[in-house]
Length: 217
Image (cartoon, rainbow, N blue to C red):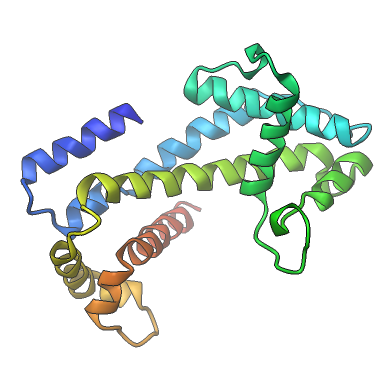
């Protein structure tokens, strides 16, 4: 992340305060996302786990091992060196819970989220067992890091209260890429885009990434 921050500051220094929509998009190219994903995929390939775990505690053990490898890979931190290992194991499970599941208002426990299906598959070996759970965890980490990258770009290049820049960037986005962003849809007013600029840019760059991946295949 420090290297990314320096690169973003360089963009801002070179352009001054006149940041254009293409400056934002240059920081969020498919190549940037591919680099993020490649590091996580290499980490996944280095991790070995069995198809089946014995019980819920075994499930949590594997989640903790993978979470620890993730922290070693990205933050050079060994969670096994923490004095309170029970807390570290629980935090690893909660981290997986937050990132691997979606909010479900029908659930009354655990903040309307659970990993029950993943736990059952890991114990029974169905649907790829524990191996598929780790693959799903990796997919969630890829999405987390891409989302964090987008948030970092916006935080570094566009002050939250700079609505003039947001309106100008929204107008540029609409004029240059409106037909791609709103394929088969009616174009919206740039003021709506300005108030939700990060969401629209996220949708646009992810669409470009998906298109690039489809071309490659």
